[in-house]
Image 1 (cartoon, rainbow, N blue to C red):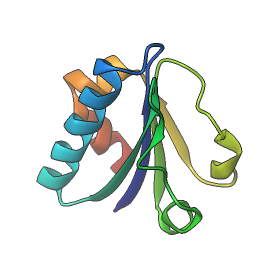
Image 2: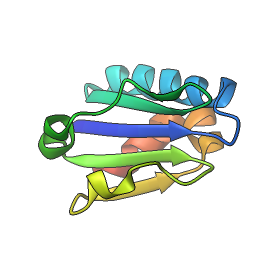
Image 3: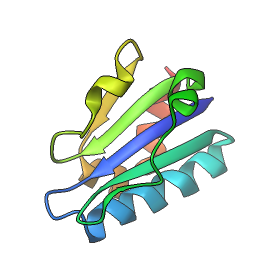
Image 4: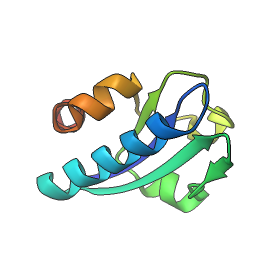
Length: 99
């Protein structure tokens, strides 16, 4: 499965990057392809391209704030979870996307 994800927290520092790391590790373990954009204190990093989004099977928002430029994902299946869930149980979050 091709997944694009956005991680973001109010301060955009530790939790944003921790969630991105955990999701990437879980996706690799489960055999999924994932691209993760982080949004926070440093702005948008690893920004997802229109092609990344178009070719994805699902969009995952692991966020505790509003996603910037959310309209880029219009028309895609979006699943939203908390950063806490993405950090503590990334594999479970990704298994939810499979169903």
